[in-house]
Image (tube, rainbow, N blue to C red; front, top):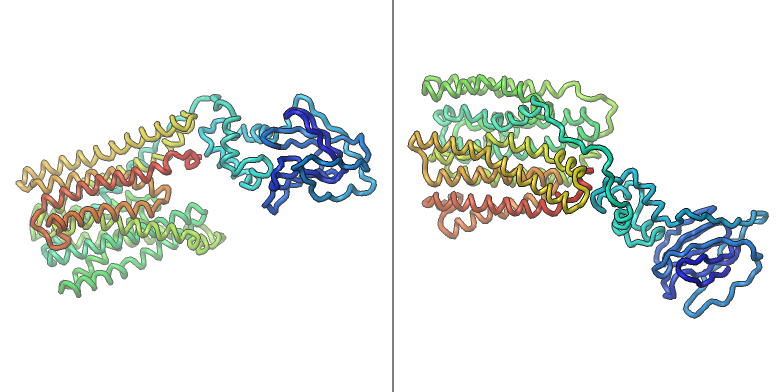
Length: 577
C-alpha cells in the first residue's frame, strides 16, 4: 500500500489490499488511518476504541491540518510492495487479508459531492437546528443524537462535542426565518386567580390569632406558631417537591399516596413540637393543639394546591375568617366562636384534602422508591432551602411578635404578594422559550432575557410596595407607625423581589447556592447587629431601628447574591429547548 504526497487538495492513491500505513503526521503519537480490505479503521493513540466502517471506498481525513481525499485504486496487484517511507513515517501493523474470492473494490469517484463528514453532519442536523441561537443548543442536539467526546475526536477531529458543536453552528449559516415567531400564550384567567390566591391562603389562619393570644400565654403562642410554621414550611415543601417529581414521571398514584402519608403524619409531628414547647415554656395543652393545627393546615393546603383546588380550601376556611373578624369587632365575647370556627375549618380542610388523594392513577405504575432514591440530592436540597428560607424570614419577626404590633404585621405585604411572585415566576420559562424564537444571536437573547428578568422583578416589588403603603397608612391612622416599622416593611418588600429570583434558581435546582446566599444574609444581619448592639435574637433589643435597617441591608445583599448565581445559568439556551 502506498500514499502519494501531493498538494492539500490532491487525490491520493491507496492500494486497497495492501498492509496499513501511517497517513497523518510525523510525531510518534500521530493518528493512523488503516484500510485493510473493504474496511476502514480510524485509530487515535491512547484510545481503545476503533471506529470501523464496513464497505467504505472513499475516506476523508484531516492530516496535518488539511483535509485529504483518498481514492481506492485496484489497478495495482495485491503483491505490490510498500515503498520505503520517508523519514519520520512509521508503518502500522498489517490488517487482515481479504477473504478468498472477495471481489476487488471498484474505484469510486463522486464529482460535485462533498465527502467531508462534517458537512454531512451539518446537513443531517439542519432541520432540527435551523433556528439554533448558540453552540450550546447545537451541543445538546448532538448529544441527543448519541455523539460523544470520543466520536467527536475520532470521527471528526475535534477535542470534544462542544468544539464540534461550535463548528457545526458556524456552518449552519444564518438562522432560518421561515414563519412568524410564536406568541406568548395567554394564561387562563381561572388558573391565574388560583395561583394569585396562594398568598391570602397562607395568611388565613392568622385571622384567629388575636383570640388565641387572649387564651394562651402570648410568648408561648409566638414560639409555637414560629416553630410549627417553620417546621411546616420545610415539611410541606419537601413533600410537594417529591410529589411533583413523581407526577412528572407518570406516577400520579404514588404522588397522591406520598401526600396522603405526609398529611397523616403532620398532626402527630405538630403535636410533638407543641409538647416540647409546652415543656419548655410551662404553657398549657392549648399549645399542643395550636402547633398540631398549624402543621395540619399547611399540609392540607399543600394537597389542595397540588390538585388545584384552592377555591375549595378558601370556602372551607371562610367561617374561621368570619369568626376572627367578629372577635376583632365584638371583643372577648366572640372569642369562643372564633376559636371554634377555626378548629372546625382546619378539621374540615384536613378531611377534604385526604379525600382528594383517593382514586389517582392505577396499579400498573412503575415503583416510586427507586425514583425517590435517585432524587435524594434534590430532596435534601429542597429541605435545606425551606429551612433556610424559614430562618431568614422568621428570625427578624419572632423577637417582636408578642409586644410590637407594628413590627409583627410588617410581614403581611410579603405574604399577601407571594401568590403574585409565584405567578410571575411560573411564566418565566414560557417567556424564555419565546425569546429563543425571536433572537438568534446569543448576546441578543441574553440581553432580552435579562430585560425580562428586570421587568418581572420590578413588578414583584411594586405589588408588595403598594400593599406596604396601605399597611403604613393604616398604622399611621392608628398611631402605631414607627421608623423601625417602616424599615421592616421595606425589608419585606425587597424580600419579595429576592424571592422571585430565588424561584428561578430553584427551577434550575441550585439549592446549594440558594442556601449559601441566605445563610450569608442571615449572618450579615445578626453578626453586624451583635457588633452594633442591635441583635434581638441575642438579647440586644434596645436598638430596633438599627436592627430593622440591617435586615433591609441584608435582604438587598441577598438579592445581589441571587442575581450573581442566576447569571451563571439563566442565559444558557439549552435550558429552554
